[in-house]
Length: 164
Image (tube, rainbow, N blue to C red; front, side, top):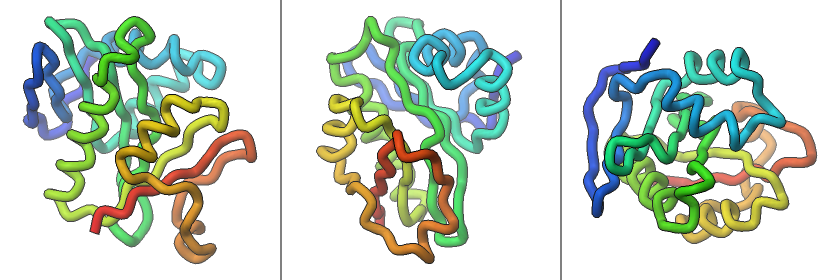
């Protein structure tokens, strides 16, 4: 099984190809995301999350999938929710996550989305730093706006990037 949702989009940066909604084999997504999120997801729940994504982004290095982001449209204010974002452990620390995130932000702005919203664990300092350097802010939105966004327990940090 593979996923192709109105494919085409690609960036090439020094051996890394970043693309959106290509015909990604399911096992490529699973190989990257399941080891990173195995405490929260089974194969079945990960597959369900993949199927629910409106936008799937992947980064490939020399033909191997090294990073993925699963994103869905959310709220009535034209936003996107980053359901899962992960870089294979062996590829971390080389800027691939930053490249993938920058590609997603540029595309989202060009498409006219108003914000990107995500959750990360409080102890994931590397991810929080990357998101903050990209302009994400921690919990700076009001209760009316918050009602439209997915909520999780107190063990995760909500972050938002306003694009407009």
